[in-house]
Every structure is written in structure tokens, then in C-alpha cells.
Image 1 (cartoon, rainbow, N blue to C red):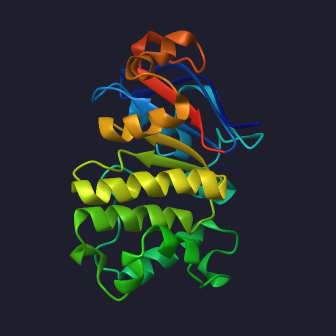
Image 2: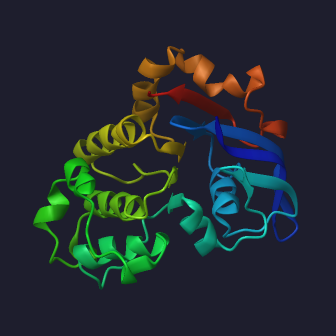
Length: 240
């Protein structure tokens, strides 16, 4: 079943045409990894899906509803979680407060829920120990773990991750790789991942049974299709 369907999407920055007639589908419980050099439109695609950028044409359907006219907060409450590049946690708030903010993506927001999902502690045990610590006092890798956990607090059915291993120390990169696989496999959450860390991509290769060459050029096979070389490579694999 298709969780996300994008058809003929065109997005601009000013007069610069970044995404050109992009078609993409993500099925339920599936992880899709977008691979490409800087500046080819990977982040632009994620921002278009969550509503931070408004495409000039095309259609974004999620869970059989059109998102085109919905603002970002409504897309979040519809079940789209977003972890931006650079994490963007709130450094002045504690780890616990940052996590609770994620509840705003759920119906009723923080007014109805105050409980932190134990699954986030299973994924990232260090967060339990650091609940009273300011987010800005965490390392870069710990902040990334916090950002992913905060997005999960909204109970998304689709999680958008923009380069989650960028600038992260190697030992935490491995933790994040394992966490992303668990998110899809154990929670059934679809994942759309932008990643340039080749080790992360090679880990996924165990599930796709594809060679690295096939991963990089898989978009030539036609499903999904991103035209005009907008994104250099796309990998789809099922963790169920």
C-alpha cells in the first residue's frame, strides 16, 4: 500500500528550478534512501513534503489524502514526522522538554499527553539519563538522537530524515543506523531518508540485495523516477 505518492512535483527557490517533475512513492513499512551530491534537491524534496516549501506544481498525497494545501503543522498531525538537517533542537530547553514538544504533532497536543514513549528510551538509552540536561549541552550525536526521538513522539507513520549522520562521531552513527532500521521494522513506520554516509547505505544493502553500483544508479530502472538527474540515486528496501 502506498503511504506517500508524489507526482510531477516542481519546486523553485526564487527563479531557480530545483525539483523538476519528480515522481516518487513510498509504501507502508518501507524505507527509501535518497542519495546524491549537495545541491541536487534532496533537502528541497523533504521540505516540499512537510510544507516548508510550496511547490509550483505537482501533487503530494499521503495516506490517501492530498497535502498540497495543508500547512506544516497539519501535515505533522496527519502523521508526517520531520528531522531536519542540523537537528534544530531547542538548546535552552531540557531534553525532557524537547521530547514533550514532539507531542504537539499528535491530536490534542501536549494538553492531552504528557507521557514519553518508552520506545524512544529503547532506541536511545542515553536520553533517559540526560532528561534534566539542556539540549544545547549535548554532543552533536546526542542532539541528533534527541531530534529523532522528538519526531517519534508525534507517532508518525512517515518519518523524513535529512542526513541524520552528518557530522556525527562514528560510534553514534552506528547507533543511529540501528535505530532507523528498528523504527521501520518494529514500528512499521515508513522512512524517507537523505543520506551521504556510504557506510549507512551499505548497511541497507543487506536488505535490498543490491550492489552499490545498483544503489547509486537505481533511478534509471524507472521506479521511483526522479527526472533530469534531480537526485542521483535512490534505494528502496523493505525491512518487514
